[in-house]
Length: 352
Image 1 (cartoon, helix red, strand yellow):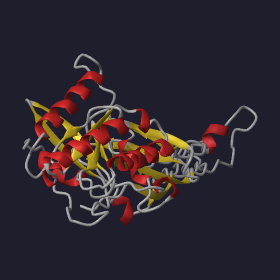
Image 2: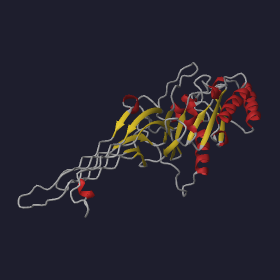
Image 3: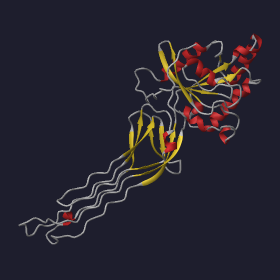
Image 4: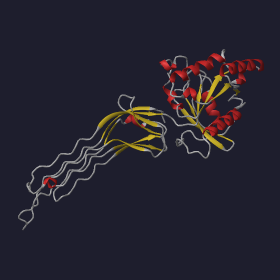
């Protein structure tokens, strides 16, 4: 399944049905009077977060959604039926923006949440409604009101417990593949990861969701490289695992580059709890490893972990550290802020 995290959609609610102009035509009833029924209300447009989805790919192939018009009123005081609603089903974590792509309409963070975004038009009154003591045979009825139409933007921000950040080729996808059953593309060239990925990691009978995003480079907040648009997927995470490759000549500079992009992006990402790790340490001799760990510790202000997804060194310790940080921020007796996404395509895995 392709990953799509943003889509532009046109929606229109249903028009109200027209009222009816009708009079009783029954034998032996000389003055039957008006009996035109009211029109039905037009259908509404709803948006609902459902389980089993983690992409907006469906909205690449269909961008127009229209609710049904209400049924017209009929004689014998028969009112028209309400028009059928239309519901847009989206993954949990989807935000709905107005056409300017800046005005937030709603934010669906939990499975089952639903929001009406366009109300159907009211049905028109039939001529029976207008009967009075001074007008006992009205010959007019109201047309139904028009429905609402708008263009909206759907923007998905994945819901995960931990997010992976770092420069391209820092080992993020390799880490995700090693600790979960997710199978991201892994290759020895920059920007192998073009779309965010999700996986469920297990450690000590506990589990948590990890989100991997494409690598950041200097100037990403200005659109350099892939840019920083995918950073939205780690906005909802509890913690960050910042991976710095041991292959980098200057690990301190690599760390500061990514931190600079996180701060430039804003939205509170730079303030999230961060675990720093020197990845791919299997490629270093002991002396070089010690030097780079020391340089990274000075730049980050914390003692970094040393991990290798290839040899498995430090992987379980990293997962335990991540789990402890997540549990510290979300204690078991606290009410969860959001529901977990369904990860049928990125199921749980085992630690290495």
